[in-house]
Image (cartoon, rainbow, N blue to C red; front, side, top):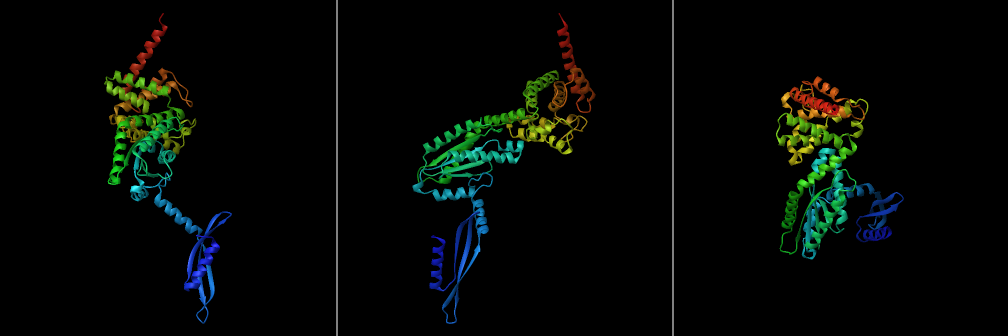
Length: 422
């Protein structure tokens, strides 16, 4: 468009030729960045009708120009990831759906476990996971490819002049990169389900080919969903073990205690298995609670205590998102309910509390008291049993307490007798 001086000369000439005002935009580089301006050249006439003077009115438009650019960017891009949005993707698909861009390939990628991460850590961490996907996709696709966030947890990529073999190869490299993500030091495992398809002939419908890529993605998601959920859940567990008090040893001891109590109560093998799963995952909701609160040695403030009391509900939402574990979601939600109705989060009382939660509550209290915590010294098995009996009918189910005390008490006596025998 030429330099500013050239623009001035061109517009002055136009005004002199036409006798009409002329407007043009220009910019210049300043010490604090590029500045934008708009100039209007207006002719003034003498009494004989001839142009006597040219009046130039200039105003700075930097703020307006930048605001317009921001609006334009927002209209085309996803605000979380910075990738293109679906509207722009659809427009580009129409623009590139021409013979000279064939073969035209599509990739659909679905982020596994986004809901679980949102429930565990909040949407801020879910957004961070989406941004990791955006970085990964930018790294593996070309600059001319159109990468978009297609939906809540779905991404779409449009690859002009890319054959079916080439796009399959790209997806394979992406899968290998995802395997490397497992050991990249992030607390949350990154998992994507992928599907791809290619329009090779002009007669094919691009929208139908895109749907084929989506169908293949869903088929792959079904095949890998259980392992993806398991990997994500394991990464959440690992993070919980690393930063909080829920050690692997505590989970194992608790599982053994709960199973032992369940057998004494005549529960089925399936119910005992559920108890062991519950022992392993009952405090998974603590993943979203600050370790500084959970490890605090002094008394918690009212706000801190309110934060801690959220963990059964968070754990419930996490586990509900894993269909294979849905049966323990309700006991997880209820494992801090008290027999007398003074527990949380719902104030259930008596047999309104799931049996598994009532069993876990007794076993968990016993293990915590006898193994200790950094802020609480361990006490003897006898003292722990006495405390559990004291809270029978208040915090704990009296029937469960009776069987537990009989079982653990007898075990303690047998162990003591065995150790003193010759």
